[in-house]
Amino acid sequence: MTIRSTTLPSGLTVLSDEMPTVESASVGVWVCAGTRDETPEQNGIAHLLEHMAFKGTARRSPRAIAEEIEAVGGQINAYTSREQTAYYARVLADDVPLAVDMLGDILLHSTLDAGELAREREVVVQEIGQAQDTPDDIVFDHFQAAAYPDQAMGRPVLGTAETVRAMDRDAVGAYLARHYRGKRMILGAAGRVEHDALVALAAEAFEGLAPGEAGNAEPACYAGGESRDPRKLEQLHLVLGFPGLAYDDEDYYALSVFSTLYGGGMSSRLFQEVREERGLAYSIYSFHSSYTDTGMFGVYAGTSPADVEELLDVIAKESGALAETVSEEEIARARAQIKAGVLMALESSWARCERLANHLMSFGRIVPIDEMVARIEAVDGASVERIARRIFAGRPTVSAVGPVETLESYDRIARRFG
Image 1 (cartoon, rainbow, N blue to C red):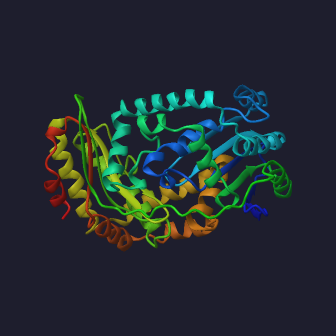
Image 2: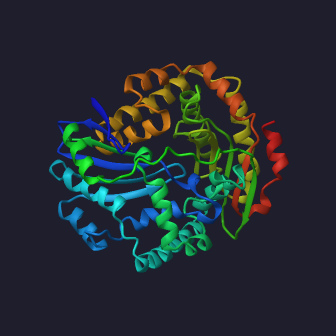
């Protein structure tokens, strides 16, 4: 595995991971700007800008953007998260120049046409409506808002219908001008690519990119609390969470192993006890989300109102048990799951491309695979028990959508983990 890095005079970092035995390549640009970089009035602007990037440039119409990439069998897409926005293409190796040129064009030369903006605002409002109508989706937005109240980290990535409809061309253009700068951008590629050629392509496609300054997002402050959204549904959708760990925390890998054996797969404690033994839920899983300065750990479950109390009993019981005893067999199984995921991802040019950018933004460096595997293998029973005590000692966050009147009080839920 050959990973190389070059920083252009603009501050744009170009990363490559050459895979000479494949016939394709994945190319992407990651911008260190997302929901955390928005004011309350701007909520959703990072995501709206992601949409607008595909709505025409000085050289390409919206239709031409789609047709050019699909004419060579390629794909182009984007996503927005709380700390970053990514634009990426997957193409055959010979079409890497087209992919880089198109990415540079849509990010540096978007026209932000007023007519297109008016239409796309309504498209995003429809997307917000779809999320609102999906209880196992919106419950996570409510969860985030309860965990980080009145701050950027707690606001929804999509924004609200009100904030999105209020965004005009000047506002979107100002956000673009402030955040889409070389020091906040990474161009990564993996597959059949040659680094020096990629650097030359990037220098041409991103000519004129201003360096700007590094990001300075609002610090996150986990508070915890609750959100209850009463709806007439058959199931209660529940997310129960606690403060997690930032990327640079020494227990980051231990938390990954802990989450996997707690509720990360079919052999996990929660899946076996909640679904297989008691039939309390069809879907139940644990998760952890890390950020640059904070993190969240939680459990999602969809259950019938009649079963919610028993479900909480099991979640609390298993959290306490993991703080006291865990078998080497469980740990070995969880380590194997994570390690397999890391190593299997090496077969995908997209996974390797995304890894380059995410590692640089999250850890400040590309963590070698051998080091990742070694840190996973180093997680032992003492590490898992320490994580259980550390995580469940925090103030809980409870988010529920559905027949919430069947859910016990926040204080009672908190006492289960006290």
